[in-house]
Length: 111
Image (cartoon, rainbow, N blue to C red; front, top):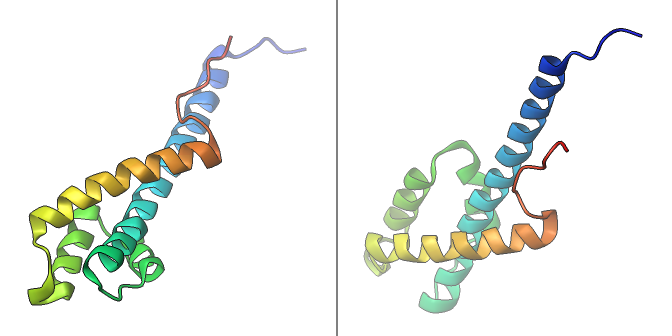
């Protein structure tokens, strides 16, 4: 039996943990956009498709998505500052929801 290559084991664990944390962060980011669109619909009477906005947010940073959302709402927009505040709240809700569904994102200990 060959000796245990600790460096290889640790590298594999690091790759696994990074992928798991990236997946968690992605799920939170996309869900936050959907929750924000749903909130704007309920609060301001818009007719935004939260799923479509979430899909479009996959390929761009949140800042660009929020700016596009502000422009798309036009004169009826509650303002970019309010959109950012609501996005922070939606992100907190999304984080809690993803924890319930996927578990705590904290890295697992090897021991």
